[in-house]
Length: 530
Image (cartoon, rainbow, N blue to C red; front, side, top):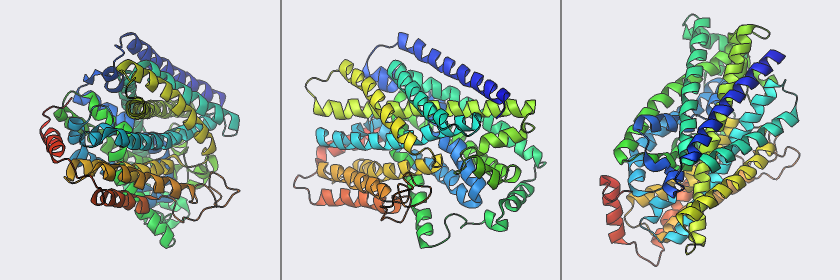
């Protein structure tokens, strides 16, 4: 890119980072040091504020960069991500939002432990939450690296690596100093910026084709080199039975995974009541629904105006399709409009990454401190020491995400998020639904459900073509894959439900009917909710 692109984009990056660091510093001066303040922002946010924050937390780099890139490369099949992410919110609204807010306090494990033996359940759920969060963080790191590499000309591996390190350092600062209150305001600012940028690009794409969506789609199909097949199912997932099964697996993971994401569930605790949590989801559905519809326009717009070949040449997995589209819509390389629009979109994408990684890091560090540390050192745990542990945990999780992000830097960010969703749907969703709705569910069933989904999901990913055995793998020079699918959801999600059922029916200890009745009343009415 030209020097003007780099300068303007870096200035906008710097402005956003300065603003967010200012918010974090201001919040850190007014914090009380309590666990409720650090994990839930004092439960002071309104449904509108929390709805924007949820949308900001959910609309990640995978959505803005990855989905549009996949649509630009694979047409109809890339749309599965947009549809899956959107439909998943119906599961959240109908099954978990209000009940989780009533039953829990800070984390997923709070909901399960309400009627189970706390120690084994917290260790299992806390471990699962950390694994899911780290996988999700890796996707954001890869998106940041791709963005800055494009900004600097796409040739500097060192720049991509240092970007990953820099994003990791910033997220640790946000979480350690500001906690949930700073993270929430960063996400609200980011949601507003992202919606404004996406609306602007969508309007410009439609204006380029005079509002004729048919012309947009036909041009995209023509430039794709695949003709009308670009607009039909099967370009990526229709080759053989393995590809079709991968399609089903990915769809299951996307639709069911959202309800098991720790950083999404933790957002329901930042409002004062269950009714406010439900209204937050309604607000977020409106924002998220509009956003994902617009990513479809951006993806086909990139295919029509840039061409899949140019997108793939810039980044093999399509992560840079939207910035390239912005450059073209603004007038092309070297033009003032192109420079400004490219820089704005790059800055918005970077803001997206920073806001999302802050939310994920906070949720995972809360799981380490509130669940794992509290369970392992119960006698010495106080609210103050727990928050201190959470701050140290943020640094450790950031370091792990940085390392994995450097390894996976060539993979598509939406694809990486699909893996995180599969693990969440396998390990967290079964135990959550069983705890809320199955009267006979026991502690053994809860522990078996978590590990019965988590361990197979992680093992199948490690033994899949994602890690070895293909040119696009993390280790392309090695081949130890034995599992043919890229997404393990179709196998690991049923295993999580099955393990929970087997653990319950073979448990020597019967379910506690009184605690279940208490939890059921609390979940449905909010009586006794924190």
